[in-house]
Length: 135
Image (cartoon, rainbow, N blue to C red; front, top):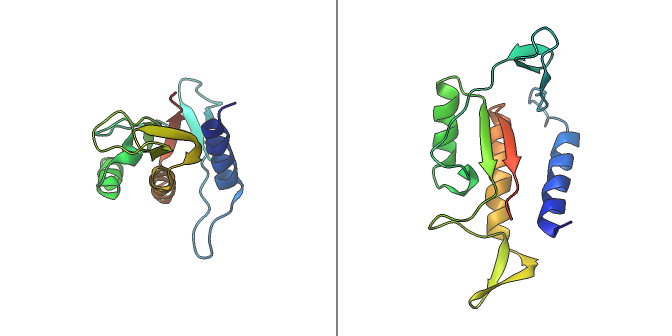
């Protein structure tokens, strides 16, 4: 298994295991198929329709992340698909750059800081995130 996949899985497991901070409400991040109507999802035992959209598929890479998330929730959105890609101009890559090459044994802390911020900010807004790991 590639190191990036392991790190993402461990990060997600750690986030799922952690409880709410003092003074915050508990939020369920998991979704299930709705028992009453399998055409819908369920969250906290209640049917939910996942609605989403964004300006980029790798939203964690953009500068105005919080504004984009606020716009989504303001119009009733509760879902985002996030690809772990770095193909757009200005995107950072997960691995450290050494000259004109990438060192696959060294992480780029900025990439993972952006991703962590994305997960933290979506959790604050109770947004369901679908993560797609790209090669």
